[in-house]
Amino acid sequence: MPEASRSRIWLYLGLTAGVLILGSAAIFVRLAQASGVITSFYRTAFAATLLFFPFIINKQKNERVISKHSAWIAVAGGLLFAADLALWSSGIVLGGATNPTLMANTAPLWVGLGSVVFFHERRVRTFWIGLWIAMAGVMVVMGQDMALALNFGLGSLLGLLAAVFYGAYFLVTQAGRSQLDTLSYYWISTASSAVVLLLLSLLFGEPLTGYNPITWLSFLASALIVQMGGWLLLNYVQGHLPASIVSPTLLLQPVLTAFIAIPLFGEQFTAWHILGGIAVLSGIYMIHRSRFSS
Image (cartoon, rainbow, N blue to C red; front, side):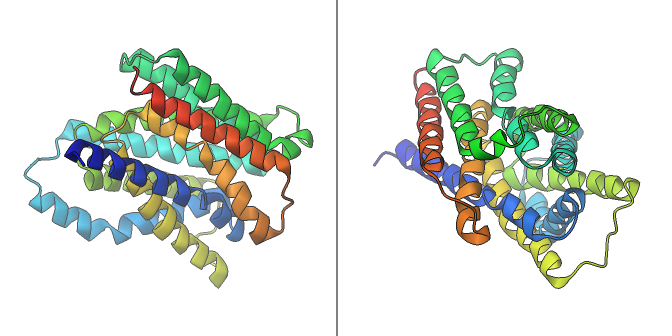
């Protein structure tokens, strides 16, 4: 097998593994008996703390110096990621999980448009068709809950704003990864997110302590599995694949979350879950195939 083909296989395996891991993110938020902002803070803070020494060792071994410009790009990525987490979790508190999550899943649309405007990437018709099919699939998976919450309130608005920040994060990460290695970009952006989320927690008067063992374990598991596992893989992948390809793949998240929640929380399984899942997979396949015809 040619080296290029082997590298591509490992790249897509990394992307697939990252998406599969991120599918568990909402489960840990649900298990933790704390606000979304606090859960997000500990998730990023634990990850940044645990990877501090690996980051320092990597920095010393790496011959490529981290410039102020590239460091600020990573900081900007961290600020955008923190804003996304804070807006999305606040939207869920105000408007329930369905509408904010649905609005947040419009992020790939903003990434696709941003890649054309800022990076002058050419996107063929197959890309846009695949994107709409995948987004429609997400709506089908969430359809039963949507029927109970078909109103656009403040929670939905915050979810939509979260999508814009989420999309901007992917575009900034694409620029940052072109200048920084995976661990350097990841650590600087994650540490920046933790600082912002800590400030928001203090601003909102959220307690930093006093949680039960299950909640602390959820914080730690979210850091180890989601932040250090899933996002580290995705940051690596974004050094090789454009944001407009990586971001739509994350539309698998709500599908995976739904399938995980069925046995874990006893939620109802319907044929719509299968139909929506097939639509999401088909749309993502079209998006990735479009890359080779762009």
